[in-house]
Amino acid sequence: MKKLFRNLLLVLLTAGFAVSCQSGDPLVNEAKDAISERNYQGALAATEQALAQNPSNVAALYYKAQAHAEIARQIPEVDARPSDYTKMRGAVETIYSISDTLAEEPAELKLSQDMTINTWAFELNSAVNIVNSDSIMNADPDAITRAVAHLENAAIVNPDSVLTFDIMSQVHYMNNDLASAIEASKKSMSMQDTPAAMDYNRLAAYYMMQPDYESAITVLEESMETYADSVYLVQKLADSYTAVGEIAKATEAIQNLIDDEPNNPQYRLALGTQLYKATDDPNTQLTENYDKLYDLRDERKSASSSERSNIDKQIADLEAQNDELLAAINSYTEQAVEQLQKAAELDPQNITAVSTLGIIYQNNAATYFELRNNTLDNEESNKYDEMAKQELRKAVEYYEKTVELDPDDTETWAALGRAYLTLDMKEKAEAAMEKAGM
Image (cartoon, rainbow, N blue to C red; front, side, top):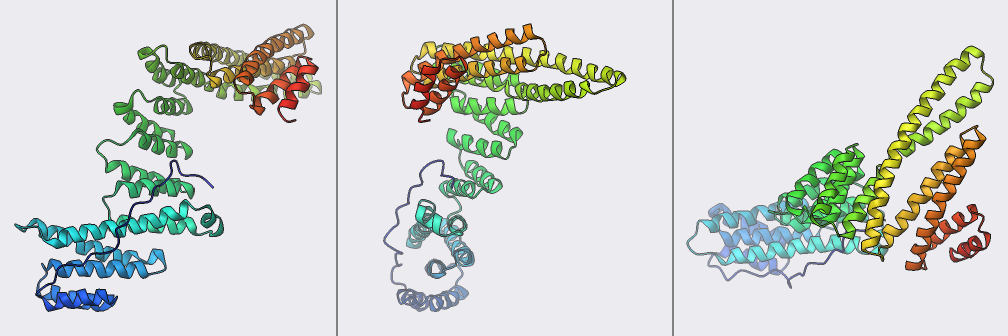
């Protein structure tokens, strides 16, 4: 089950609904007494009579709102409550409108405000209690649906609450309903003069999960107007640029942070990570090309002379494309290494920078091993094999630093063990594998 992006807090409830002062209107007093006796339909009948005589009777409106709120609460089906909550809200808004025209604020105005907050908190807390309870969520397959219904009720009762839509977006996300999560998040942000950085971050994350990177970019570019120095927002923006092939924009976004603060290791780490991500697509294409080359060379063995000519051309084209891909990969990798080494230099305890360098060098080694396996030239094969092992020795250096910083990192111990084994360092490999729990 997905967890909420942040823990949800319960809203404090007041003890209960207050009652209005004694009225000179017998119908209003009848409604008041009926509510005290929990005869809510009787209360509604009395308020309707009172309002028929005087539509501006705020006391009658208050008791009408209170009766509908109480009726709604007693309906066991959460999704069947909106009708009464809508009528409650209509009565409350009428009280607000009438109060604006009066020289003196009526007592019912404050009472209706308190009732609104109390009823809203009741529905909001009901939703929060559900999603924060593992036992409820595990036992009831409809629990998340009920939580959403509670939140929709809260939004009817108190449509001006940013918190309602904030929580609603997270609950929709838990329910794998990204479209609704996005709409609730947008609603929450539209109600704020200046949305928080985490609001931009969450909305962008929803778009990226769809995936809709163009919309994520729009959100994140807007966030830069207020939070240009936010590393995690800039990183997300760079990730989104990369996803749509805008590598230059991706690196520029993070480079702007470095220009302002060149000795910030986190900025260097972010740029190094982004540059290395830029190798993903060319690496994928390179692997696909190697597979095609293997198939073509195998096909060539049984091909006729005329067919071989066409196959040879395809092989040559793929090899030329591979040269270009390798050049791009090497360029991005060299830039990434430079930034990550700078990050590790500025902060020797930065385990992420150190371990990422190990991963990069191990992946470099894998690329050279792939080249070795895809050449028929023995001299070239030996060259690639040695180049791969050189890169693997560098990976070992950074993996060893990583486990020095975190001796309990079993994944790195496992990677280190495999690297030792490839380099024929059997005793060290066994020790590392033991540390990895293997």
